[in-house]
Each structure stands twice: as C-alpha cells, then as structure tokens.
Amino acid sequence: MSLLQVEGLRKTFGDVVVLDDFSLSVERGQCVVLIGPSGCGKSTALRCINLLERVDDGVITLAGTDITDPRVNADRVRARMGIVFQAYNLFPHLSVADNITLAPVRVHKTPRADARRKALEMLDRVGLADKADARPDALSGGQQQRVAIARAMVNNPELLLLDEVTSALDPELVGDVLDLLVSLRRDGMTMVLATHEMAFARDVADRVCFLDGGRVREDGTPAEVLESPTQERTRRFLARIRERRPIDAE
Amino acid sequence: MTVSVPPSAETGGGAWQPSAREAERRRYRRSRTVRSVLIASASTLVVIAAVTLAVVSSPGWPRVRRTFFNPEKARDALPAVLDGLWLNIRILLIASVMIAVLGLTLALMRTLRGPVFFPLRAFATAYTDIFRGLPLLLVIFLLGFGVPALRLDGLPQDMVVWGGLAIVLSYSAYVAEVFRAGIESVHPSQRAAARSLGLTHAQTMRHVVLPQAVRRVMPPLLNDFVSLMKDSGLIAVLGVVDAIRAAQIETAIDFNFTPYVVAGALFVCLTVPTTRIADYYARKKGWYGPGTLL
Ligand SMILES: Nc1ncnc2c1ncn2[C@@H]1O[C@H](COP(=O)(O)OP(=O)(O)O)[C@@H](O)[C@H]1O
Ligand SMILES: [Mg+2]
View 1: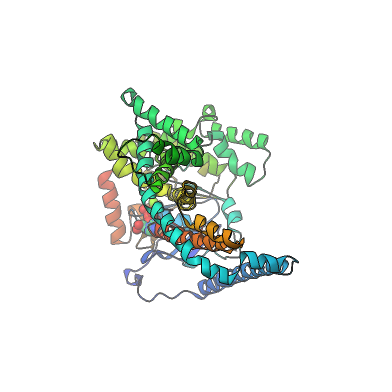
View 2: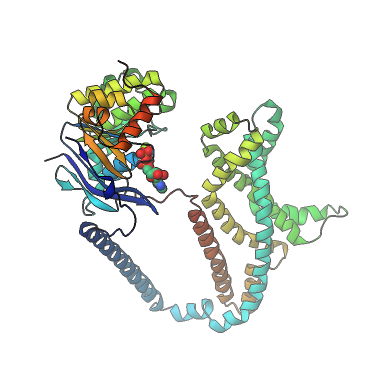
C-alpha cells in the first residue's frame, strides 16, 4: 500500500481551477519531486495534502486512511506530516529551540526537558547547534530554512513535504540545505518536494512528476522525465530551465 | 515507466460535477453545520426563556415593568430624547473627524526619528500621557467652566463647543496610541522596500505604512468610535441637553425610568448597525486577511 495516494484532486480559488484531476502516489521511503512552471499548482497540491486547504473534489489517503473525509481529525493528520515552506515561516517571537520544541511539547506532550534535548540533537544534525537560543531574525536565510526543516522533522513525521525550500536562498546556502535533504533521504524519510533544483531531482529523486494545467502530465524516473520526456510541454519547460541554468555540465 | 495524459483529456472547466464522494462529504459537512446551528439556537432559546421566566415571575416584576418598561411613558419621552440624540450624533460626527486627524498627527509625531524631531516627539508623548491620565469629566469642566471664566474676547460662549473640544482632546490621546500600535506593527521590511524605491519618509508613511496600519487597527478604532458615541453625553454636565440629559429631565417628572431605557435602546440601535456595516466593509475589502479553514 502506498503511504500517500492522491486521486482526482480538484482545487479551485473562486473561478480559477488550480488543480484538476491531480493524481499522485508515493511509496514509503520514496523521494518524489514535483516540477512545473510557476503557478502550476505545486504549492497548492502540497497544501492540500497537508490539509491546509479544503479540496473541492478527489481523495487523499495517508497510509490507507482517507484524510479528506470530514470525519477525520485534521489536526491529528497534520501532526503526522511535516511541511517546510518557501519562506521558512519560523515564529519570530520564539527562540530557535522554542520554535522546534513548540509542537513536541504542546501537541505530542513530550516533557519539556526531553523536547529540548531532542531539539538540540536536531539542531546539531542541521549544523546549527550553537544557534539554539538565537532569534530567527538573527539567522541567515539558509540557517532559518534548516531550522524550519528541523522543526518539521522533530516530530518524526511519516511524510515530509517541502515547498521550494531553496528558492529564497543565496546559491552558496542552497548546498547546505540540499545536503541536509540528501541525508534525510538516506535515512529513509518519505519526501515530496516542489523544486526547481533539476540537479537535485536528477541525482536524488526516485521519481519526477511534471505538473501543468492542474494535473500530473508526466511521471517517471528522473532519467525518463528529464532526459527523454514524452510530451512537448515538458520539453519546452525543461529547455527554458536549462537556458537559465545549465543542469548538464558534462 | 512513464505515464502521460493525452492532451485531449484536458477538458478542465465547463460543466464540472462533484463526484459521489465529494457530494457525500458536502452532505456530511452541511448536516454538521445544521446540527451545530440547531444546538446553538436551542441552547440560546432555553437560556433566554429561563432568564425571562425568572425575571417575569419574580415578585417585584410588575413594579419594575411599570417604572422601566412603561409604553405610554416611552411614547411621551421619545420626542425629547430623540432631540437630545440628534445633538449626540452631531457631536459624534464632528468630533470623530477631528479626533482621527489629531490622533493620527500625534501618532506620526511619535514615529519621527532623529534628534531634530525630539521636541515634537516629546510633545506628542507628554500629550498622550497627560490626556490619557486626566479624567474626561475634569477636562470637560476645565474647558467648559474654566476657559469662559477667563473672559477673553472673541472666544465662543457655546458650551457644546467647549465640551466637544474637551472630548476631542481626550480621545485623541487614546486614538493616537491605537494608530501608533498599528504603525509599529507593520514589518520594518515594508519600510525598507519603500525607501529602497526612493520614496521619502513621508511618502513611505502615506502610501505604504499607513494603509496597512489603519486596516489593522480598524477594530480598536471602531471600539473608540462606539465609546465616543456614549461619552458625547458627558457634556450634559455643562447644561447641554443630550439624549441622556433629556431622559433625566423626563424621569424627574414622575420618577419613572422608562426614558433612560428609551435612550439606551436608541444608542444600541445606532451602534449595532455602525459596527456591523464597518465590519462587513472591512471584511469584504479583505482587510482582516483571507478567511481560511485554519
Ligand atoms: N489563496 C489563493 N487565492 C487565490 N488564488 C490562489 C491562492 N493560492 C494560489 N492561488 C493561485 O493558484 C495558482 C497556483 O498557485 P501555486 O500553487 O502557488 O503555484 P506554484 O507553487 O506551482 O508556483 C496560481 O495561479 C495562484 O495565483
Ligand atoms: Mg509555489
């Protein structure tokens, strides 16, 4: 059974149909990358999966449970997933450590001392052990994003959603965040990423999905989708990305 | 394996019909909403009924009804109370404009940076400290009885003017702080973005900071507006006849308190639509942020 199964998802904002018959399935331990032009609905799809938006139609199942059923407790579903936003969304009034311990203490009822210890471990893992008591404002973008990933990871989520987590970062900071994702991947974390980092998609992802016109147009291994796409619109999209930043340096 | 959807499947818009699954979800949500509304209405009705019953069946109720809810007395007092209310409304309209201008000016003075502006900043700070501290009634007495007693030529003799001015001076201090809180809640990056485009401090305030700040402080401003509506009656101490004073005069005839209830009901009839309309407008304009399911 797939960990995540999205079938026929539809999401509109007023008259704008953003997702229309969007389907995706993710196996446990897989790393799936969503690519597609800006505004094609990658963020919306991730927000729907995290139940931050109410879908207009379709079904999302997480480990066999239909989480779009209004009878399920959405808070409990969200507690099983982690999401990392493009703009970090750290809480500015809390220290780095308190950002990370908020959910363990309040949601998962972890004793404060244990939560703190775990937060420090997590910070050590993301290379920010010395920043535990800093305010988010005092951190660089790349550091803030790594704190956001630590915050999402500290609850041991079954599924980690990442929305263009590197696109607001300076190029030299992107590497730190991507290295972190690669190490999470190696630990068997199930991940769905929206990203424009084609090199990451090629080297790390198990599958790449090309999203356009509100649905998945192409779904396959990185080699299939990135090297020999079957559709004209995928080729055009990839060509535009390559023009801007060559992803094949050989 | 590469799965691809033929472009012909791209029908999207047109006649979309919810699936059976979605239709069932909607039915369930609707039934939950109906259930909550029913429970809420039923419990409200029960509470109202219980309170009404308790009051009406109390031994003193017939007497209370005669002295507070006497229909004939209400009808007799209404014209005088309405006359008074018209004065409240005029004071409210004129004073609220003046308060908004003065309050905003004071708030802006407090946001000025740099040593050159120290005197302005100090003045605005001292002003808000003093006028928030002084009881409104004292300010009304000082201006209403104190200033005319100076016997200076050319000053207005109308008590409404002095009473109104006292209200403006006091309320401006409160409103200034509300505006200041709004201004300071706008993230510094907004100021940086505006200044980076070459906008001056004043332009940044006018076109970037204030529009965001004012929207954010709409609810507390409405609060002050409603409270101003009622406090405008305080100038009755200067001998002016507003709604409450008119009610008091009517009451004095026979110690029947119904005119006060009439005045109270009229005030409520004024404030409720005002706040509802303002709230509706702000929500429609998206000032309170998008309504989401979270
Ligand atoms: N809250 C919203 N209200 C209205 N339209 C929205 C909202 N969020 C997203 N959209 C629209 O949905 C489309 C997809 O947005 P998004 O999912 O952010 O795209 P992507 O992440 O792929 O760039 C865009 O056209 C955007 O304008
Ligand atoms: Mg996006």
